Image 1: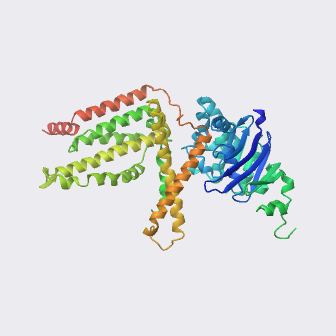
Image 2: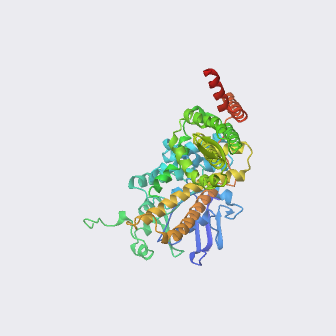
Image 3: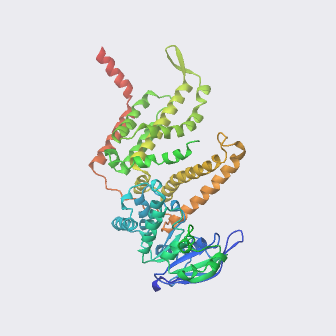
Amino acid sequence: MSHHIIDFINISYSYNDGNKALENLNIRIHHGESVAIVGANGAGKSTMLKLLVGILMPEQGEIRLGEFPVTKKTLNMIRQQIGFTFQDPEDQLFNTSVYNDVAFGPRNYGLDEEEVERRVIKALQTVGIEHLLHRAPYKLSGGEKRAAAIATVLSMEPSVLAMDEPTAALDPKSRRRLINLLQGFMHTKLIATHDLDMALELCSRTIVLKNGRVEYDGPTTEIMTNSQLLEECGLELPLSLQGCPICGH
Amino acid sequence: MVDITKAYYKIFILDELAEKKTAIHRTNPVVKLVVTFIYLLVVVSYDKYDISGLLPMLFYPVIIMTVGDISLKPILVGLAIAAPLVIGVGIFNPFLDRAIVVAIGGIGISAGMLSFASLLIKCGLTVTAALLLLATTGMNKIAAALQRLHVPQIFIIQLLLTYRYISVLMGETSRVYNAYTIRAPYKKGISRNVWGSLIGLLLLRTYDRALRLYQAMKLRGFQDQYYGVNLDKLNKIDIIYLLGWTAFLLVAKFNDIPMLLGLLVTKVIK
């Protein structure tokens, strides 16, 4: 599969009300790259990820994963390769136990129960919540829900991780754990986020979207120090690069 | 309505009870499903005035609750939800069917009152049996048992999604209600003026949420096909459970056990 190169070729998408969400998007993401997608609210970050996994279909252009275009016919194969986590982990957890939720994907792909169990245990171990195996998802804390939601896609052993706001609503400790976890993944990662500090730590490349267009595409370290461009795009410097709020240095 | 958030968490209690490891819980789900089905058929097959015949049917829920370590409270909550519907259906029986059929202590009992009481008992028994099946088996294993019994996939998926939708609806109701109450501190309940818009909002929100859940399922390869948990093969205990309950239910149906017991007791006394 050509090392899972992801190509957005001249992609445009409008919402039902006619609002342009993305316009002439041309992006190539290489195998193993860790890419942050940032931008103000409504810039088109989530839409871009939803187009990648075929929840939405572009009105113009083509998205390719390796040599396969994202079309209705290839969706099953594409979705097996791309693990997508929603902004709200509750949307992803719909079974009565964590085990069943994590096993849902592998079972749908017809794996035998032994293989399903192996994958479930491995995924839960990876995100560090093996002990929550039989717990009901609605009883988990926010951080645990997020970890469980990630496990539900890891059990499908995808080659690409696409995450929508993975650190939203996490406490600092859970956020740190998630960042450490993601640092250990060798998958291609696409992370739509407002958490610029996480992007700085985790992603070597950043794409800045503004009103559905690519405003910047390059090294993360470069854009994260460019306060003028960030401000123009409705963003600001990452907290770790801002002065101390007490002494000003 | 005040405790709607609590109620949201309570709806999962039956699934939690299903995680227990008692002898009833270990029994094969297919067998439990078949026994419950036979039980429902037998209960509803009684004549509308036959109350004494129904009494032995109480034996089944009592045994399941005792052996399965299921407390009465969650079952009563479930019954309370079903009760208004049955009361609504049968409430006019006492007024429409006024013929006196029996007098107890000089008080005449009409046929309508008997049939209403019988309807209530039947409702209580059937709903309890269904709740006990859920509390000793869990929805996923019930679905797997239906699959084993070659019930059409579409039916199983409808059942699972409807069950899931209840919690989505409750969750969204809880959020909307909380959002309303924090901005309406001196109001009791929800003002009639906003009922329409709140219900409309609730419908749209649950629809959106259900759509996102469906998308999450599709993203993980869901093809309108249910691949449930694997069930063990039937063992000796399962067969004994099935035959034992079937025999009891049929004996109770075709013999008037309360009358036989009564005759036995009076003969012993004589």
